[in-house]
Amino acid sequence: MPTVSTREKIIEKADTLFYEGGFEATSFADIAAAVGISRGNFYHHFKAKDEILDAVIARRMDRTRMMLDTWQAEGAQPRDRILSFIHLLITNRTRIMAFGCPVGTLCSELAKLEHGAQHRAAQIMGLFRDWLTGQFRALGMDQQAEARAMHLLTWSQGVAVMSSAFRDETFIEREVAAITQWLDDIIDDQTRHEGRICS
Amino acid sequence: MPTVSTREKIIEKADTLFYEGGFEATSFADIAAAVGISRGNFYHHFKAKDEILDAVIARRMDRTRMMLDTWQAEGAQPRDRILSFIHLLITNRTRIMAFGCPVGTLCSELAKLEHGAQHRAAQIMGLFRDWLTGQFRALGMDQQAEARAMHLLTWSQGVAVMSSAFRDETFIEREVAAITQWLDDIIDDQTRHEGRICS
DNA sequence: ATCAGGTTAGGTCAATTGTCCTAGAGCGTC
DNA sequence: GACGCTCTAGGACAATTGACCTAACCTGAT
Image (cartoon, rainbow over all chains, first blue to last red; front, side, top):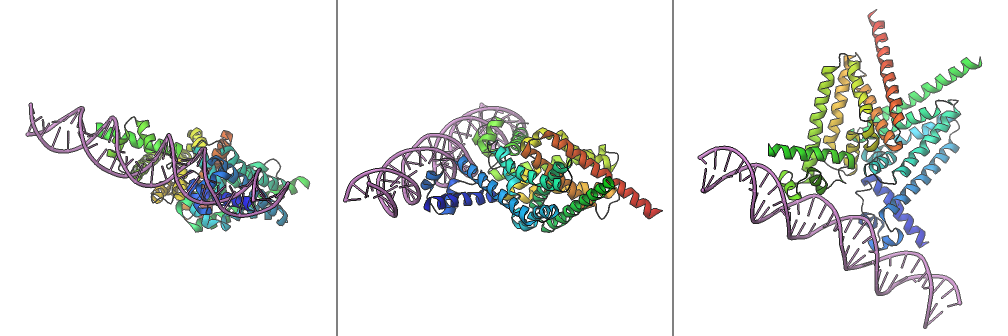
């Protein structure tokens, strides 16, 4: 499996380098050196830099879908599944403090570059939005489901930016606690509201 | 005033270009062309690219301080002053949707580049944090003042990233309404709490 | 008029960029 | 063995990058 392996390794390394150093600042030579192949060989797999970006975005889409499916299967209740998402901030806190959120920073950079792939990068964010919307809808918050999914996403993106700016690890932990509190508050509010309607 | 004028024009144009296109993606030639001078002339004013970045950050610090001073003078009450900050999202919504928040995106980019100026870029964010902390403290929220300033900043940064990703103008308006609601809620909560203590 | 200082233009420099080509190595099939 | 295919290496290519130099220019003081 030499074909698939090398191509996959290129995409994997490019993914990491795009995240840690940014798309624009990462060159062909950087990726080729990281993979351990020549720059000439690189062109055999990807004719242009935009093609690597497309492949990286596609890979991130796939992996995001897989992660969401895992959370869907593992979490017994919608609250547990949403907590899986929130817990991403803790799990990846070191990398988030150093490089920000992979999705958010890519969207921001491509927006500045007026790159055509910005729309597809935003679709990764859309995956989280739609999945979270489904969770809030499962909690009975039909009308407010998407708004709350967006609020949770917005909050998370803010935490990523702020923790990266101030390099404060305790900030992430405090915010995760606050987000969890907010989640439980609206769940409590929802169950009370349902009780008022039913009874 | 040829000296100051040209140098100021360079910093001003560089500021705009760094914001709209990013620091790394903006070249000497881009700035020189925007100002209308030769590249050689450029080097007389700034020996290295990092020097322009330093000047741009210093300029943003100054202008931020001036803006905060204006808000401090214009706003009769802390609530009005905080609303001035929140209203930035509305005033600059077109540019925020296209290029994100000037402060947040610069911090993120410099973090990825592991640039030494990242710390000073974060100080601009610190100006907002400290000023907002002062406003919440003026509202009597001594212990929670900084946490609430950070929360407001975090929320705003999240709105900037999300509105830029999805290019949704109505999202900004809805979030500004939600932030305003949150502000009035904690102010109400604070006045109730004060009444309980005093009476 | 002369001179000094700050300012500007144009051009050079090595290094790096993304793109592209060619020659050949490896390997399975006929 | 001969052929075809994918994969690889090494380099060439023009364009652009940040950095730097030198020769003029302007302006005001002497």
